[in-house]
Image 1: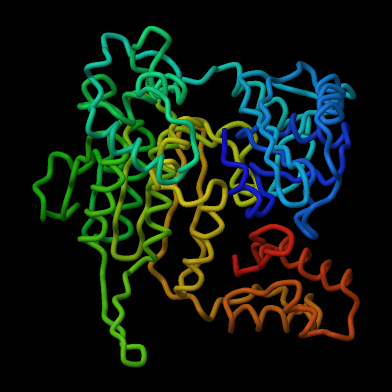
Image 2: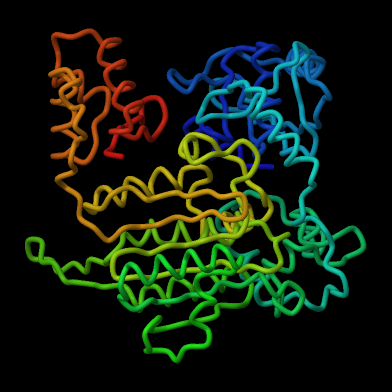
Length: 479
């Protein structure tokens, strides 16, 4: 159970909702959205804008909860926690991600988008049903493994980090906690997620659970294109082309296989990338500041996402990290899960491996659930680079960070179809990196807010701007 007091200081988001008044319809929608996605918490009796709202009575809350669950098909299991504040009682309801698809009594299936609930389209619903039908591979027990194959030092490190993040969390016996987080099965056998997170030598049981770093020499673009085409036909990976070459020969300059539990893969992968990244010293005032080729957060986020969101059912492929003079590409096996697409990846969140995600979050490798892609984009743009390139195929997903300063982005020929206000907005983004609705209202104070909102929507639809953030935190950056 999450710490209620810490949630009271948080903003609504993909895993947190506030319900100021006891409304069974809205509560049912939110419970269904959480169960179909990543799970989440609903705080009753608090309006995040003004503080305390309805005064809550236990029996009344129980009645509203039962009414809400009666609207859910099938009902989901919930837990609740009550906290007394100086203004009265506050109650938190917790619902976990479900292995079933949940709908409302009127047939709608909902998920979270930012801090709101939204219905799934028929095609999205079909993709989610297909994803659920496959089951969750990370929960399967690893054949031939035993509790002794997990590393006690790694487990203890995780538990220490978890306790630091949740100081009020309940202290359970070690094996009981490992079962609770899905690392051990009911009989004590390690699961796929347990082996990947805590295994002494996870690759003995899951050989594909590794990462491969390759730094390519700056060969002719035509050579790379031909090799990629050949690989695509052969069904191989780009890194495998150079396995027979000597390091330093035409092809690649460094190749590293990175193994161990996932936390070590992230640490070692980051260390290798750091060693190979260009760096320069910049003096700001009296302070010397080191700047890296790519923003550190963007690199780490792409690396963490690759190892925790990849499809571990695909046993023939590893996570690949390709570094070139003009780009850093991180490739993870498996396409995007459920209803996630390249177009909605900023706004939507759905994890293929929620236990791996939660494990790395508790460990501290994920700073805030559901917001990493937004910040990755923001950091790249703030550093003067284009936003990351996301590419999704049925069998792979890649993120490419481009080492190309792009402060003077060229506007397409149809700029003559933009109005004067939109040209001002584009100039503002080029000068400042992003624009908010408030910024735009100040630029065009004589124009109504709805007209300005539609201007920005039009620029997004024309693929000039990319919308990031949610509600008051919404900003627009160059695509």
